[in-house]
Length: 79
Image 1 (cartoon, helix red, strand yellow):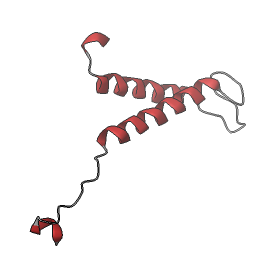
Image 2 (spheres, one colour):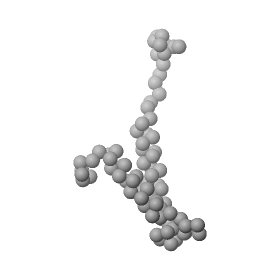
Image 3 (tube, helix red, strand yellow):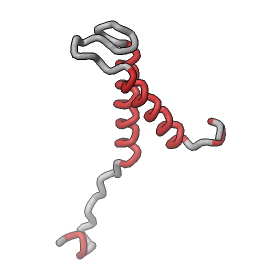
Image 4 (cartoon, helix red, strand yellow):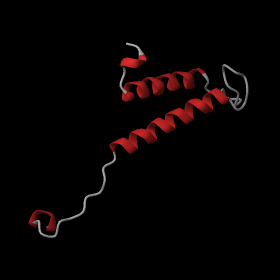
């Protein structure tokens, strides 16, 4: 399917999978350099990490529920 027919969640999932794949290819070697770029601070890996972090934040916000206020006249909530 193409992007116009995907839900926002599906697009976010695809972005996350792509970012994880990028992180696998741009892992730091024991010397601290990126395998693909050969630089110590790989901007591609940093961008992928930021995308995953943002996606997790969006997921947390969308699944969070508002706290409910207790009704003092409802005996089930009073207990």
